[in-house]
Image: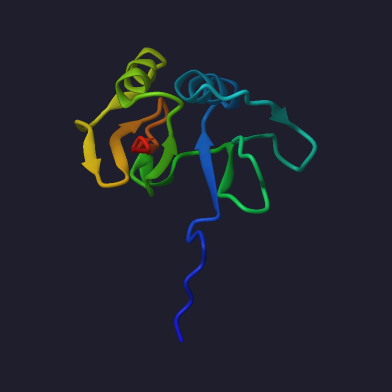
Length: 128
């Protein structure tokens, strides 16, 4: 018997060398309202989701990117278009590393954040 969950990925932890700088980057690129949470053993900033119980969630935390930034790639949904998010990404210190890649359910573009984390900017397809 094989296991097929609703969401194979349930949590992502994004290491950033400077939490305040990381929060500023992700807030600018994705239009997030990130708040620093220092209630646990380490400070972090939660990525916003409508429901922690039914969606994929994650956080930024002070840390060193895996393998010098060559770790896994996570994809985050942009609030508007890839082109607009790409402009914000480069203006905030990130780097675009591919052209937009179309798929039946949207488009994505590979990029890196200022710490070298590999990420995808994702724009879902518009409903017909």
